[in-house]
Structures are given as structure tokens and as C-alpha cells.
Image (cartoon, rainbow, N blue to C red; front, top):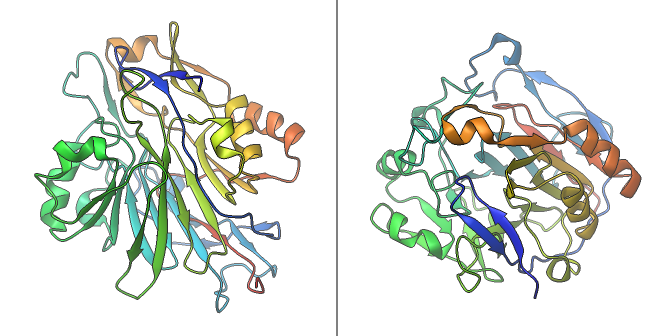
Length: 339
């Protein structure tokens, strides 16, 4: 199998990448998207212009914000960088959190990045979390300055992670399940909701024979919706073409170093959406941080969300791009009459 060369966040971490398999069939969704303004669900933001909640609600009916009995719901809150808070039918999953201090890999002279909008959001502002999901073992995904106090705040927290993060997570958490690409695990919330998570293969951080990092497929409780997430847009066509995901969260703007790709996107993100028969693409801006340092000065962005939309419209005209605003839940519902 051919390898894809990727680099993750630091120039010496060149990644020949291999990808594994997700699952599940696509769901027929209606395509009415509406906006609703509330303030109760918004996270703490540093700018007044974002002091509102906007939900993109996808439903069979054109009623915004209504809760259909038996309808699966994803509420996706972007926390900037690679970090997310997902509410899947009431089950709350914290993904690759960076909530304490900056992202600097322990060498701030080389790279030091701070969030632009969620500057005031801290660990104490988190709701009760059901699961911590870790995709990769490096600091921009497995951030020890955040995970140490998080393990104190939630000592019995369920954790799903790549086995590559075992040396970092085992000293902190007692309830960790390490899953490799192709393996899956079920998370159960306090309200009884159960969500199935399957690992897919992400980038390889090192020699080609090393275990790849993880992406994930997340099933809603009744199987009406499937979400795919991998934070570097690294995938293999042969291993994804049999899989389906209604919602794809992926970078769409490339981040490049001379002769190295840190984060892919643009046409690669379009191919990913087409492979998974995605109906909704949620673009990440994981390079949109206040950064400084030697590495930050030479990273170049390629493409925009608008250029991605143009590429996508030619390949998948029915797919919709749902742009997240940091700290504001983006809600996606399935139709209530699915069998």
C-alpha cells in the first residue's frame, strides 16, 4: 500500500501515513438549515460579537430547535485548534482538548500558539463529561497541561485513545480504553445513552512500520447519524470507499512547510467527503491561532473555505458546508421518521 507523507505540527515529525476502515451506511437526510439565537448554550467567548448561539438544525420538518422523539442529534462545539465538545444524544465527548495554557510542544521559541476567541474558557467551564477522546499522541492532541488537571476534575472519566498515547495517559487516568484502527468501543452516558465509536487510521508519526494515530467514526444512539473525524485530512481511498458518514469534520485549508504538509485539505477534503458520501462537511480551522515562533513564521496556508466550497460544489453539489463558530453549538438532527 502506498504511503502518504504528512508532517504533524513540528518539521522533524514527518509522517508517511496509512489509513484504515470506518463503517456504517449513509442516512437519507433532508436539507433545510436554519439559524436560531439563544444564549444558554454558548461557551465563554472573548469577543462580544460571538455572544449568541447559532444552531444549524437539519431536520425532516422545517421547525428549528424542536426535539423530535426518537431523533438522533449531534451538537458540535468547536473549541479552536483540534479541540471539540460533542453532545451526541446527551452523551458529552471532549475531543483533543487544549484548555490550560498555550500549545508550544515544550519549545515555545519554536512554536507558541494561543486561541483567538475562547481566551476565557477554562476547565471549570466544562459541563459534566462522559468521555475523553484522543486522536494522536502529540501535544496538539494529547495536551498534558490540560490533561493533568482534567484528570483531577474528572478522576473516573472514561477515555478512548490511540495506543500511542498510553505512556501519557496511563499515569493520569484509570479508565482508559485504547483502540486501534478497525476496533470499536461503546460509551454509555449517565442518562443511559450509548454511542459506538470506531477507530480509523490517521497519520503515522515516524517510520512506516509504526502504528498509525487514530481518526474516529461515531454512531448516534439509534444509528441514524454517523460522524467521521480525523484532524489532519489523512486517509486512504481503498480503505474508506466502503464506508459512509453523514457528517465529516475535517480541515479544508492546507498548512504547509517547505516540502512538507502539516495539514491537508482542499481537494483532499473533497475526495474524503465524496468517499464517505457525506451530506454535511464541518470545516476545521486548526491553523487559525495566534501563533509565534520560528516555525509559525514559515507555515503557509493554502486555500480558503470559499475555494473549498467551490471545489465541493463541482463534485458533490448536494453536500452542505456547516461552518462552526468557536464556542457555539452546531446542531445536526436526523429525520424523525427513519426506520
